Amino acid sequence: MSGLREYIFKIVILGDGKVGKTSLVLQYTEHKFNENYIMSIGANFAIKMVHVKDNTIIRLQLWDLAGQQHFQFVRPSFYRGAFASIFVFDLTRRDSFNSIRKWKEECDQYVPGIPLVLVGNKSDLNDERVVSRREGQALSLEIGSDYYYETSAKTADNIEKLFLDITDTLIEKHITNR
Ligand code: GDP
Image (cartoon, rainbow, N blue to C red; front, side, top):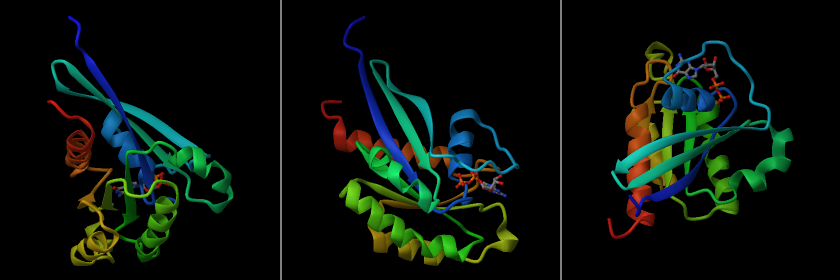
């Protein structure tokens, strides 16, 4: 049957090294978790297909970038055409929380005004937590993010919800006549 509509939403995932960006994507797209740390070289790229209605297909194109300064040169193509960004910090590392403002500044330079979401990851490591939910919520308000989530890429807690809400936000913003 004709009338099939297809949309691709590019989403960039930002945050310091080792906060769990790659793991979040892996858990969402493949329902897998890997304890062994593999440093990202350049950018990772994954696609997830989301059926919204019978005649509409949405693909999320998920990009995550290694946080290391020496990958600076890949930034422009990484950000180009992004519809939304997910800022990730590690609930057990305050330095990664403090870096979010820096990531927000960079994102604003390349793709100003896109919807943002803030994520505190590694919620399963509750005993090691150093950033409170209240602090996360306050930062979320400060940077103008649409939502604040606490997730675990290990247990999958809140991962589906995170991507579902972003998809809904993007549908609302970009797809009319539904
Ligand atoms: P990235 O550099 O931000 O992409 O971080 P990775 O996804 O490579 O994760 C860095 C390390 O943290 C790896 O050893 C992961 O196994 C671990 N990790 C990622 N997410 C979680 C989580 O939610 N809980 C726990 N306990 N470990 C995690």
